Length: 413
Image (cartoon, rainbow, N blue to C red):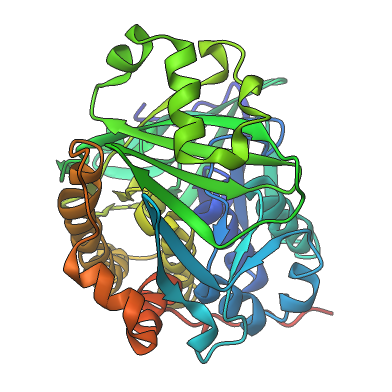
């Protein structure tokens, strides 16, 4: 669309953020806080989605502290895990000890992502410059020549044209906005997929055992209080093979991996209770065009390894706000301004993805194909040396080049 239609409702903003995930909600909060007129578009009526990352890492909680939100954030129900352990057959190895980190919250908070997003949404309501519009789906980029000038959105009341100095795509790894912008996606590859299901808990207590590997199988368990959210790892495109062996065999394999689920594995009543999540690792060659920027999963899809996706998305948002909040003049940020966001965040993304690929190829791929799998030497060394557990904790909990809030808070009457 090359011209803004005058026949439908039109909203003028400085920044239109497409997607109400961690990147979009945090960027909207920071820009609204800085006095930038911003709208965040969320196509659903709420943030409730089963298949969203639950791990809030120390780097994100440090951002919360810098924003003065940490005390209230920690009142949201969550579980704390300071030590991550993996069970390899009968051998238990401590993989990371976050209690060794010098940070405000030396632990991972397991919090359903909808609670995390609802918290940011509620805190952002005090900023008059910020709107979060739910049930509003961005369906088309508006362009003036090669410059993106906003989006066309679909609402219950009809179409809505949003004219913006900057449009930021935060609409995930299957981003429609980046597709319409013609962005070049580089596929890094992943040798696995994940089967996602839930099983009830007979004991309310959680645990430090995060991953379980045994006899050519691997599963990760997330404690959601009243139930376990489980990620059963399979070879890429291997779901039909798993189904062909039958549901009883699938449930039996789960119990072998996690005997704690013996009494509740029956919660998987049919294959309808098992959801396939296709794992992707990719990144954009360029994150920006005139009037347009991608961050979060729209710029770089991460593997579930390390549970870092939410936190990298938040880091992108913090960096974008730091670099752009004073660039909204008459025409909005320039292309050079937008490219500085990629320049700042590209190295952390590449480094993290390189670690994920290493773990996938050297550990996970072997674990799900080799029935005689034994932990690699490096894992055994980490399990034996507490100071190494501090290094792995820093890689997981803090990450590469952590961001700190430098965007200002606008003075209000």
